[in-house]
Length: 582
Image: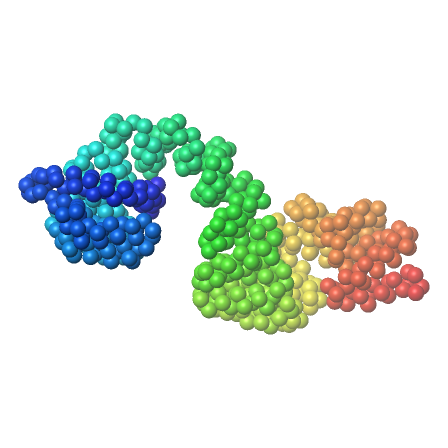
């Protein structure tokens, strides 16, 4: 149990026990306590306000009535007047301290309690108030000192033992925490909270067996104790028994639907088990209760993102950004979600916001370049890649830059870029492969072949290079047996790649093995249904097999998708015209 949780437990317990007794009972019990000798000092404590001081007592009664009705400022004024009339009464000063605490004036309340303790060191009501105040201000050492003193004065004080044990644990003084709580349990073996706190201490000590033992004892006393069920769930989760953990969390939630810690842990188990819908349901319930909890919105956003529910993810991420504008990771995911939905201007805005906060954010630059490329702004993408190369030169940045330059039809600049990279990084297979692509664009066949072979000498299993070289041979109708071997090896490395399947069909066509070609090209269309070259190849094979109608249909589909391949439309339209005479 973390320190914050332990301190919160004490605070909650104190608040639950803070109800006032009736006026007469309060006065009588305080009088009885104050009649006792203080021990070492031999002084006699001053009595609570009584009818002997009628004006003071009247103000006390009026203050108490105002307090019971929640009129805190009025109650404070009456108590202060009562104390002015009876300045020797520690009881009235404690009442003032309590109201100051109740109205959020913690510093003033602390000063008032300390004032009482200076004059009456063993006055228990003041000590208890001061312990509560120190605990609330995270003054752990001071709070421990106060509760130790309370126990020295009143060894049977149940609350002091509980709070001292938890404070020891929060200060990682576990042996002392165990000693205090176990000693207390010997006197009161059925004290529910002592059992629970001791189980929590043992959990912090990683003694899961002992921890579970005490939580189960607490549940024997109170079977609907959801906090103990939650803790047992944690023990199962730590041990990797997620099924048992989930069962405990569900029971805790069934008893107390507002046990959001249990819902949180249950959602994490669902995520581990890839039960994303159920995880989202739990997190949404937490979010409805804590709408300003940015962490919950973040987790919901990521779950929606993973489930490709990008609109919902965007909504959650924007809520996080509103609360935490500097959360760069969330801004990045937001930009990706926006780009996926083709909301490019908004994506660019988020990426630029990231770069304003972190000018060296490589991932933001890469995604910005991607968005520029996806929107045809290749010149802007090139500038980004130049920036990345200046910041942290890597071979892939040169590759990305050369690809953008090819989109601008600037093959010379692409060639220069890749040659610079080769000089800098030496034998990098991707650099040679992409240089071969440039030479293919420039129709420099021999140089293309040279650099494809260089790529394969560096990486014999480079599937794209194997396919590219094999397809290039097949397209020219040369070295067809070698082309078939190269493509078959590429396909063994990437068996479901539609483009490689197309190459296999094409080499079969060039070899005159039309039925085999048809089989592979139909499979290629099933894998990639929007590539114009594959449809053109299918049309050529169907034409060779005498299926004029099928060939014409394939050619029309090639034309439909022809924007992806420069020069294809005119070529295929000519084939279609010759085939149909139209």
